[in-house]
Length: 235
Ligand code: SAH
Image (cartoon, rainbow, N blue to C red; front, side):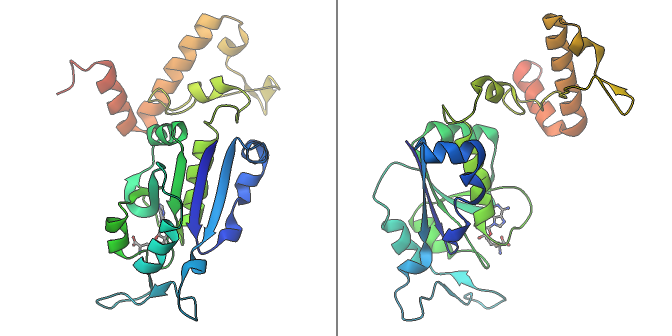
């Protein structure tokens, strides 16, 4: 079973959206498990303090290393990667998601306020993971997004495994456009090739469209894709 443990000040946010649809069914079927751990339960003082003012001054509060370490250390020692959701982390990619989904699960720490004491990250060797170049109010939504991306790749969660193999990023390209009935919508027809029944032509069209969209929208992905296809041309 793929196991997720999430450390948070808001355990009531879990499983949240992961309790419905395919992820929710798989959770109920014990294909994966989710343990939401209340960080505050590991505070030691009378007021259950989890944060304090930043050393050096400045606005906001910082999550305390000692409380977070206690919460992390209470999780039985296992070989799951320990992640910290953080805008300073390496941006999450489908490749990293695939690696995580193939592994035993993940332990995920969700920050709040100004973030966590740097010494905790160092002492517990946390891998900082970012959802993108924007700032959320807490790591919970980021953790839910990461878990959603991982869980749908666990065998038995998605209806058709093939749809995971063909989608955006799996070949380094964005996905081609999709259509379904009716054949004409507000005067717009489905491209003729898709209704031709000629599978070879359909494949060619899809590949060309995936390349066109990637080139237009994501020059960064396009450059990486070409470098992989023609390594001799790269420098
Ligand atoms: N002061 C910090 C932002 C803290 S936001 C800074 O400027 O870098 C509070 C928490 O939200 C963070 O500790 C982190 O857990 C989470 N968070 C915010 N943005 C995120 C992002 N882009 N990706 C992942 N987690 C994020």
